[in-house]
Length: 334
Image 1 (tube, helix red, strand yellow):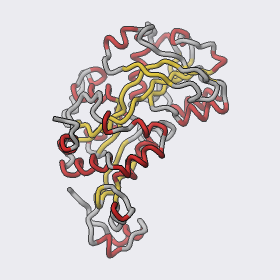
Image 2 (image 1 turned 180 degrees about the vertical axis):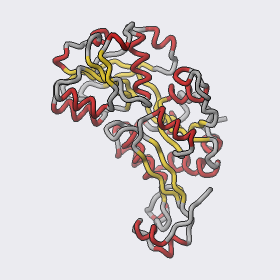
Image 3 (image 1 turned 30 degrees about the vertical axis):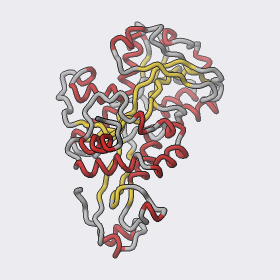
Image 4 (image 1 turned 90 degrees about the vertical axis):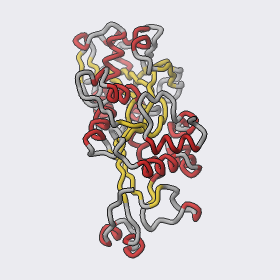
């Protein structure tokens, strides 16, 4: 594992004793997530805590962290899937979260990566949880179906996000061109602010439910989730096999008592083939230990859906050799 020596001043800033810290190497590992109002960011924080075991920490069997010895991981707010993959490819992030569709396109140089160099060093650590496609409309907008978006003010999410990619696919699947709507390209919390002020009719967001920005908005402003399905727009699922039917349960958001059918894609944790095999092996092992299970179950509603049994679902890129080693040892891979 490649380490950086820790200096006494850094140790003190971290609240560690300098003698203990200086005797042990330290490594940093960043996880690119999404906007702070989405699901990637809190999940990233949970995973960063789970895999971290800073120098001077108590050992796992002594009630301390069960992370990777000497590792300090951090979750960074970022623009989402596309931005995270670009940062991993450029070496400015060690890892990040991505939608399964975006990761597959990036690795193969297809879809939205058509005409760009494939990110051939992109590797998977784990599939995490399903990301539901939310289409949120103001209750007074008159929108009750995707078809009703024509002529409306609709935020598609910001450039670099997987949400923008999927929003375009959904509109096209329903026979709607971007020119048929009044598109804006805002983060979900910005779009929610605009809707609260009466300046936005609807917005797309792809992420695990409940999403903070939507929950907060629904508590202050009457909104409704709009159904999206391949029964209504079969071309979506025919052309893009990574979409799966999904349901946002009634009561997830205030004012939406009934289940709403939608689609989902997998949220995946990806890294680069350049990351050391032993490091990624230890990170994968820490991700799936019993202590992490407790943190995931208690830390976020989507945490319960992050399971070892679904860790390999829907992965369209190669596993990192370190992750592959762990899954073979765990009996999840032949």
